[in-house]
Length: 165
Image (cartoon, rainbow, N blue to C red; front, side, top):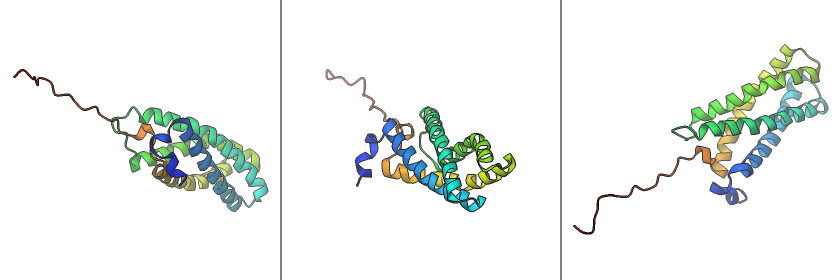
């Protein structure tokens, strides 16, 4: 019921971004904490704060990345969010986020950059799948953003018709 009050044109702009990022990152932080705990052998009391830092960085990057993506998307001839566009979006986000996360993971867990990369690589395998599913469900519940909607064409007026014939 709540989703229906935010669908379509009502769920656009900053409201859409805030709801999107909040839901995405809370679920993502939970997944990250559990995944890091499982793979690192550390306790959730260690991986939880790390996941919180990862999530904080991801929130900021998510807002910037999605703003840039929608800026690009609205200028495309076809604005349809195809499977290919969704895959590129999810993978692009994750790959660019890695640049920020590997040094943080290495420092926090006191491991090498290579070990941090391997640990983050495991996250890279699961998070794009999560991102793809989340975006698909989110768009289904709340509608796609304006950047993914085809522009409405104005009807063409018929010229040359005259009442004096």
